[in-house]
Structure formats: structure tokens, C-alpha cells
Amino acid sequence: MVQNVAGMLTELEPEDFHLLSGIEQGMRFSEWVAREKIPEFSRLTAEEVDYRIDRCLDRELIERQTIQYEGYRLKFEGYDALALHTFAERESVEGFGSPLGVGKESDVYEVQSYKPLALKYHREGYTNFREVMKERDYTSDREHVSWFYTARKAAEREYEALETLYPDVKVPRPVDHNRHAIVMEKIDGVELSRTRLEDEQVVPILDLILSEMADAYAEGFVHADMSEYNVFVNTEGITIFDWPQATPTDHENADEFLERDVDNVVGYFRRKYPQLVPDSVHTQSLATALADGEFETVRDYASE
Ligand SMILES: Nc1ncnc2c1ncn2[C@@H]1O[C@H](COP(=O)(O)OP(=O)(O)OP(=O)(O)O)[C@@H](O)[C@H]1O
Ligand SMILES: [Mg+2]
Image 1: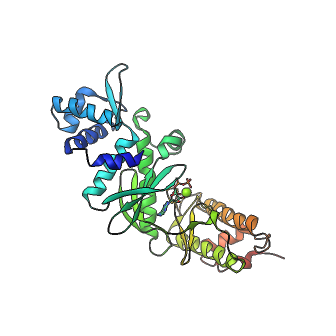
Image 2: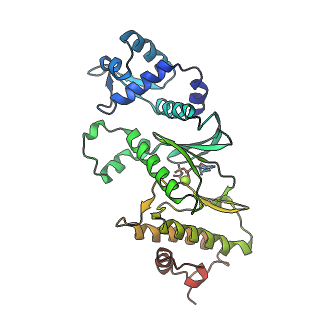
Image 3: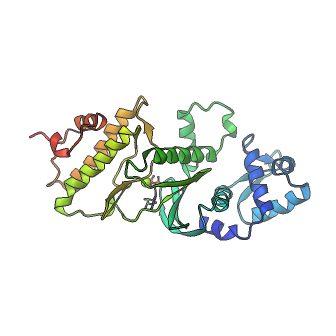
């Protein structure tokens, strides 16, 4: 789907982007932007708007509703096109490649730049927009807040965490950020969930992950979504990715999230390598030690 957007980008004209960003502007005030307001938002003439709307509808970048009034809104593809266009203008992205991963709440693609990078489009608002709104004290007209607010917030949060953590913690190097998308270093490696570690690597890799979590805590963040799916393993070590849920350590639930993260990681190793990971690891004191900067090895937290 997004690959079409990438190919399409070359056929889109500057005025098409004016139309798309005009609709984006209008969506700050209402979910569906009335047709007669679009010329003002997009700074195009009414005739030009007519022509551009047809082009963007044909390419499925926008959609129309005609109940009560004729209105338009961006589809995710339109939002994707705007972000990609911005990256292209800034030269942080020069070419679009194949999918690297489709997560529950994102689409990740390889992109070309001075070297291959990864572009992650956040999709959060699509799936759990309502839940997120319940948690946030975002009080202005709820009706008008749409999925891309949530997706953009998630991207901002992830980018901020990466900027804070890199390079002290092993995370992908952040390169650029716009709207609901981030560009970052492409990590070569295999997700931990898909590896079968050599016996003598098991505890050292577990310790490595836990000590990166300790470093992240020292830099002010708890990952809050740690699992075997969010860790890459390669010959150089490990990389922890997927940080949109990153929670500042001064957040009231931070320590609870840290303990859950520790439980997830240790639990995974224990299930997969029962002979190698002591089954009596006390994850609560392990989490406390991580937070206090006193963690060395998981072996210290196993009772007899
Ligand atoms: N920097 C990167 N380099 C290479 N591949 C990546 C990178 N970031 C993400 N990926 C790939 O894309 C997939 C989805 O990414 P990520 O886990 O960040 O998104 P998600 O949608 O939040 O996932 P989840 O399903 O855990 O919610 C990953 O599993 C990974 O295979
Ligand atoms: Mg993930």
C-alpha cells in the first residue's frame, strides 16, 4: 500500500501536496473538511482544488463524505505521502525500498539515503485511538481529533526516546522525524524471538539486554513494551527498538513498567532455556537493582 505511495510520489505535483496539506490543516478543526474551505487552507483557486481533489481521490490519498455537507479527509496513504514528501525535500530519504516489518501498530520500510535506513510509519490511532484518548487529558473537541493525532504522538514519543538514549543505549540511531513517521538507522540482525542461542551465550545475552535497560533507566526512560519481539540480536550484540511507549522514569508507574519489562524478558529466557536460566530469579529485586544502577548479572538474583 505504502509502496504505491512511494511510486506515486514522482507523479504528484506540488499543487497536489498543497491540497493534501490544506486538508491536513482543515482537519485540525473538523474531521471532514468542507469543500468550500479547502481553497483557503490550501491556497489554491477553487478550480485548482476541483482538479486536485479528483487526482487525490483517484490515488486514494483522500476520501469524501456527502452526508450533511461535502467534506474531505486524508487517508493514511495521504498522510504517508505528506511525510515522505517532507523527508524527500530534506533529503533524509532518497528512495523507497521493501518492507522490513509490519507490526501491530506500524509499517516499517527500508529506505535509501546515504546508506540504507528504516522508515517507520506509526498506525496507532487506527487500532486503539479511543483507548489512548481515554488515557490522555486531551480535552478539546474529541470529535475532531482523529487517528493521526495519536499516530503522530506515538512517533514523537519514540523519536524523543531514541534521541535521548542514542548512543548511550543500544537503540537505532534516530535520523529524522515528521508527522507520524520516523527515519532511523536500519538494524541488521534477527529478532530475539527467532534466534536459538548457543548455551554459553544465553546468560550473557540476557545480562546484556538487562544492562541496556539499566542504562536506559539511567538516561530517564523505561521501555514499557519489552519483549523478545523488540530486541535484535547480531554478531555485535543487541539492539532494543520499538520505543513509542517509552515512559519517563519520574512517571508514577515507571517502576511498575520496569518490573513488567524485566518479567517479560527474564520470563522469555526462562521458558526457552529452562536449564540455563535459574528458575528462581527474583525479578522484583532485579528491577530495583536495575533502577539503582546496581545490576551486574541475573545470577545474583537467583535464590537456591
Ligand atoms: N530500525 C529498524 N531496522 C530494521 N528493521 C526494523 C527496524 N525497526 C523495526 N524494524 C522491523 O519492523 C518490525 C516492526 O517494528 P516495531 O516493533 O518497531 O513496530 P510495532 O508495530 O510497534 O511492533 P509491535 O508488533 O511490537 O507492536 C520489527 O519487528 C522489525 O522486524
Ligand atoms: Mg515491535
